[in-house]
Image (cartoon, rainbow, N blue to C red; front, side, top):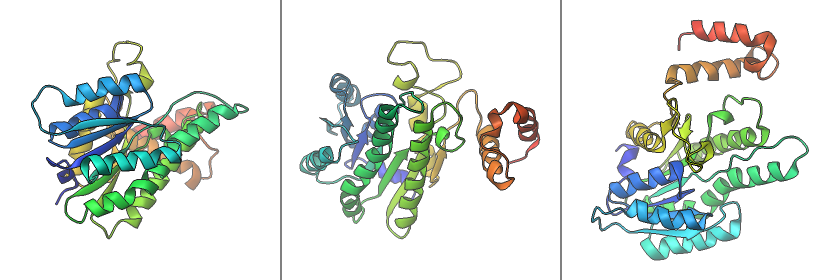
Length: 284
C-alpha cells in the first residue's frame, strides 16, 4: 500500500512546529483526511489559534489538541508522549517539522547552540521518544515519519553556517532512520521545502506572499502526492525554481567533492560563470 495511506480517518498525527507555516498546513491536511491531530509548538498564542484553525467548522469528529513544548529539550518529550497516548492511544503519523532559522556567524555561540539544539535535537528527541509508539501503531495500521529538512542542508549556500549544518545533519539522520526501518512497516520521508511563504519568510509580519514562493498548503499537498508515490526524498519546487533546476544545483554541489574543486564554487566569483554554463547544459 502507498505511504499516503497513513492519512486515514481515525488515525493520529503528531506535528511539531504545528502552530504555523508548513507544520500548520500539514496538520490541516491531516484533519481534513479525518485524522486526530496533536499540535506541538513553543508559541502559546499561536498554538491556541492553530487549534481553532485546524479544527475548522467542518463538523468532523476528529479531535485536535495541542501541547506547549520546546522540542530541543528532552524532558518535554515525555509529556508529549504521555499526552498523545492518553488522548489517542497511538501515533500513526509523526511529523518532526519544528525548526529555527536564526541568523548569526562565527563567534556567536548562542546562534550556533540555539540553531543546532532546536533543528537537530528536535528530531533526535522526537524519534528517540516516539519511535516505539509509532512502531506499535504500525502493527495494525499504516504508519509514517516525516522529517522536515532544507535545500540549504544539501546545496549549502554561504551565509548561515549553523542552519545549513543543522539541516545537513537532519538529512543524514532521516536517511539512517529510513535504512534502519527498511524491513518494517513504518515508512520514512524527508520533506525538503522550496521557497515557502511562512513565518520564517515574512508571513508573521504581514508581508505579501512573493510571487516566486509557494504557500505552505502547496508544500503539504506536494508531500501527500509524493508519499502516494512512496518517495523518500520529497524535494519541493516553487514558482521560481523547478525540480530540474534543483537537481542541477545538487549535482554541481557534489561535483565540488568529486572534481576536487574548492567548496561552494557556485558562489565563488572565479567559478560562477562555469557553474551557470555547466548547469544550463546538463541533462538530468
